[in-house]
Length: 218
Image 1 (tube, rainbow, N blue to C red):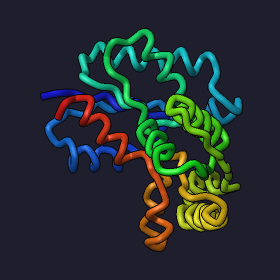
Image 2 (image 1 turned 45 degrees about the horizontal axis):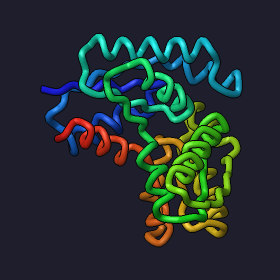
Image 3 (image 1 turned 90 degrees about the vertical axis):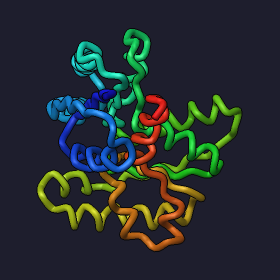
């Protein structure tokens, strides 16, 4: 049985990703590596710090010691650390949002990016820009932060979080062709949108899992 290590900076996507793997790649064994201090440090410093990079690289190396066949980097806020890890780790590393970024560039040149955290918004935007550059495509990106949504979520008010995000997304939708949800935790909101809008939303959990499946050759 092939093994996949998932490197998390929190608990938000553990259950969601476990269910998606059971649905799409049931034949793999999952190893969850979780350190919720990482995201707190990123947030308090408005970005990735050297200690965060060092700890993340150690987690990737630990995953390699487990002899896993693939590593899934779950948190978009630290996604750029995965790029560094790819230079020193032989095990394939999948970034949960990379296929989403590629699809965004393929589908439109007028792209919106929505997030509840600036530390996720900026890396996601940079990834989309890199994918556009690689594709030789000129794009326009409109970014939006949903203020207060993250704070509501961690305070135990998911309904208020959803209200704030849905308001921001509705406003952004008037300006762009498609919208990228920068955080995997936002994906569940798609079911609350009308069909026309939901069809213009790109999320990362499912596409990330399917990319792992492709990398494993399953």
